[in-house]
Image (cartoon, helix red, strand yellow):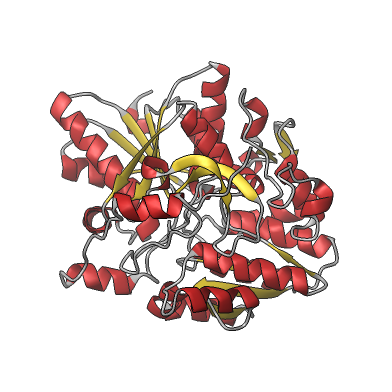
Length: 457
């Protein structure tokens, strides 16, 4: 197609929005290993998961056979407030880099929560309301998930209790206040409000917390309070399912102009954004209908893919949650407090872990100073201040575009811009002041945590 006919922003019409989520697991030959009960060592049943998660979400979590699951009309109506989101050609960045590569990004920050997290938050809140629950509990790292869930709960008049990783709670007071504005209660984790929080504080005095800690506290509160369930913003199969709207829209927009991406890049913490972005493309790859180079980008300070172990592990630091087979740094691993963004979970989605293990995708880790360098470069030419999480993908997209400059190859690069960074200005301030540093865990640090992995037959 004549490039002059391709708009700067590719929008889909409302009637082109996905009506079904795509369940990537249905097309996987090697299915993700099941969640395991740490007490019995056997796969968890729906009956065992129901006290933790909403009933309909349990069904979605365990479903690895149905490729498409209908999006309820009420959720689709909510999506219409900010979806379809645009697929943007980064012409200005291409020009700045003087690269023959064509760079596109799917922008998920055009809603009040500032990120892609709202795609799953509204779905999980909907099912909680449908079940007649009083409220939900959750954890949040950088605060994007907590913000999105507080919005969704406000929409459905549900109580929302958020346990926020302590270092983020202190670094991002404005993100915290957005949650409170939408009616959520926000507690820095680990805290003295739960038994598991007290235990973690006793064992690790002065700890800055981790997502694993916050998950433990949120699950404890959900299971001890009638009428509440726990919801999670990443990692779980159900979350990747909801986030598939990102990839489905991206592929539809590219197909509209006969554009075939060569490289698809996403940041990776627990897997929600990456899994959502790559879903339909990976589905084609699994079925042998097309091929793409798919790259997961993670922080060097929390490198679960690139330095972790593929094994069963607890999903939380308190070791009260199910066991998941994933690439993990060990549930006791806590990223350095100087790590500015999200992407601080010790493990990775079981779905993505299996795909990575089977060689369908690759992974790289990047240091945060180089991430913020890329974020600043992007902001100056594309006019969007990106979230630190998204900037990991930007870093590698720029690197790949510069490789094209060296070789002269005209590759098409697509990456996910998961959200905006306007609540991350403390981190930007540190970078601009030259106060940001890179703290990378040693082999000994990781080995000590891996040594504590549970023994699963």
